[in-house]
Length: 136
Image 1: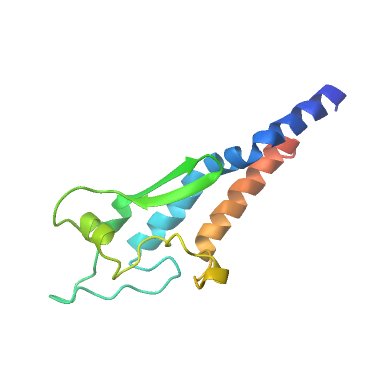
Image 2: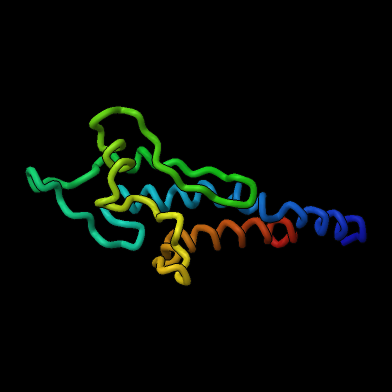
């Protein structure tokens, strides 16, 4: 490996946090969508069924999940505008948690990062680092 190649790889690490966020976005979305489709909170607890008929709640909530990279952050949000839809109910009411709240730090009384989201971030960062280091 030449010195120019090493210097080029080191320079690429300057924007590594932003690149990690971009690389992790699809993995985080997949993890969040899979959890919502299974009718569970981000920490794996099952949602309560609907009170009126006992059927599964928020069956379309996964389609309201949007994940995007914002600088070096990976942001998970719920989107939707249809009045009365499961999407809007998921956005307006936190009875059944679909995505982690912004205060997930264990030090602030939160539950910490959900394991599947943490794994997605780890896997995305590891794969990108290996690519930049020339090990992939």
